[in-house]
Image (cartoon, rainbow, N blue to C red):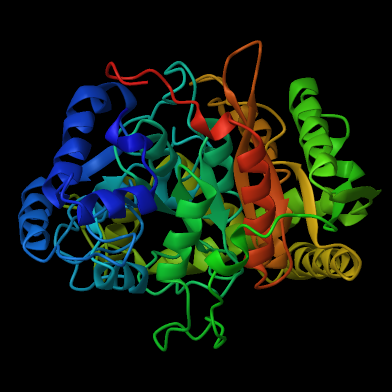
Amino acid sequence: MSIFDYTLKELQEKLNNKELTVTDLVQASFDQIDRVDDEIKAFITLNQGQALEQAKQLDQEVNQVNNPLFGIPIGIKDNIVTKDLRTTCASMMLDNFNHPLYDATAIEKLAQEKTITIGKLNMDEFAMGSSTEKSTYFVTRNPWNTDYVPGGSSGGSAAAVAAREVFFSLGSDTGGSVRGPASYCGVVGMKPTYGLVSRFGLVAFSSSLDQIGTMTKTVEDNAHLLQAIAGHDPMDSTTANIEVPNYQDQLKKGVKGLKIAVPKEYLAEGINDEVRSSVLDALKTYEALGATWEEVSLPHSKYAVAAYYLISSAEASANLARFDGIRYGRHSENADNMIDLFKQSRSEGFGDEVKRRILFGTIALSSEYYEDFYKKALQARTLIKEEFEQVFAEYDVIIGPTTPTTAFKVGEHTEEDDSMTMYLNDLLTLPVNLAGIPAISIPSGFSKETGLPFGLQIIGNYFDESTIYRTAYAFEQATDHHKQRPNLGGVK
């Protein structure tokens, strides 16, 4: 049995029984990275020397560990700031940001739990993409089949967990960037309620949509990880000042009597037949466990793609204005004057997708188009939010597929005239971010055609992550999809 097959609670027990050391765990991560990361390319920057030194120090503290995160290696998406550890957002603009001065709040909280950061994970540049093909550095590959993408923008975070390079990881989710990769890579990915987890230290893409999320092998592990990073933060005024419940308390209480809503739009034309069948099979499992489900309608969800790309691009245009080559970011050596310095630094520093969204957002915010585009996108967002609220007045959770298809091949949607096809891959995840509600993707099966994983998306009401986890855990325990692992580096 591989060390990566154990849950966090099992690893805690083994540390307490002296069957494993923290150094063993950290070394196992680096050994697996050595075996498979030339093929997967999940990591941009490794933290090997510091991680091993920290492991040795924690080994001296092991007596009776009561914290399941103690000493566990974690990978961090490269748009989450880590003190003195290079943070690039997978962009040439921040290529030399080698020594950040502070940790993001989520990283500080994990440090209090004594996790060990193994390194920084690849992503689409500034989190703008759905495949991790938009990284400045390299394309991350899907561990189940390296001809395919791992999803994005948190593709490195999902691939590292699926490839058993780390036990869990942090990503960010602006329009599905945790849940999409989780679905494509067959892992568990949670996007919390907007405001549950501090965004301080998360490099902003779209401030009203961004949320740090958690990626793990199992639902229970995910609940432990979210528990550690959730909560109010005075450094982030958008965090909710509420008491964070103990997610373990309700995790194993079952789903008898649970009322499930299934939007007909989430199983309509454009959803792959195998994906649709996997959702219907999952609903049969829930029926056997005592839950009930009914079809509902979310008609305004069809506007989610347009609303999302207008709002997110507008906010990106404002947020990325700071990267001008003087205050922040790449400083061009080819400029003759100040205006040319701005132009050259941004032209050299940003990739094509980032430039495309900045231009789109700038136009949307202009006086000529603001009323016709940006304002209407905000109105559509309100309608989408109200629809969710109406459904949650009668139902406990909403269930559907995470993505319309399994992962697509590397290079399949990279042409400029095919960018819309790429955007539509987030069709089922975008409404959740627009409404600010929580959702999780869990493994729900595999394609007979490609062997790639499917993801089941479970959407909950505001700050009701407990019900989402309870629903996800019941399905996970009734199936064995989460136990399957890709064959990499001689380990399966």
